[in-house]
Length: 186
Image (cartoon, rainbow, N blue to C red; front, top):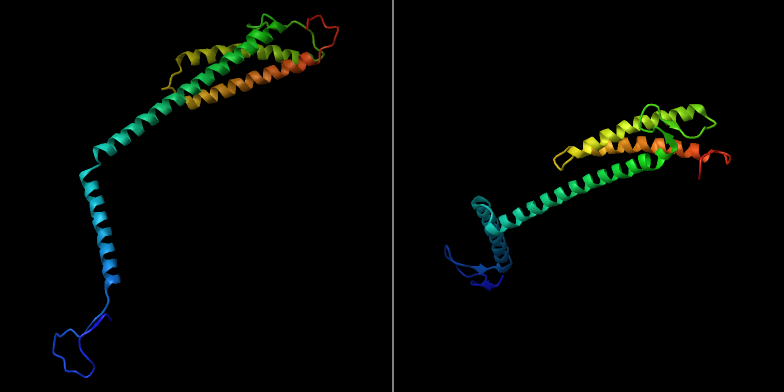
């Protein structure tokens, strides 16, 4: 109690203030709650009236930046796929074709004889199939854009790379097994 208006045993009348309690802590809580209500009402009014022009500009800039980042990422994927094609083409046509006579047609033959004629036939038929793979891959790259289904293009590139890798692994194993007296140069 902060104030006593009547002493014990004195007569009192209806409505007379007998004592006063300290309500400063309760008053502070009420003011704090009222401020919270006012803040929520202000937020509600802002939602009802819409975002401010500054907020709209911030969000629009964020959207433009995200769209540009997405476009850059798509271009980067396309560049990586084209680079994979170029390296694959060079590995097959530029490097391994030196080991074949007529490498681009169905009569392709290794320029050396191996101890495993079955593997030799597999390599020669793989080379013929890879020619089609490289041609179809190049054709798809001519039409690729950021609007293309890039997931499909990445899958296709991975499939082609794996096929070419298998072919190059087989050639590598075969060349490594050649004997010194082979009639092919280093």
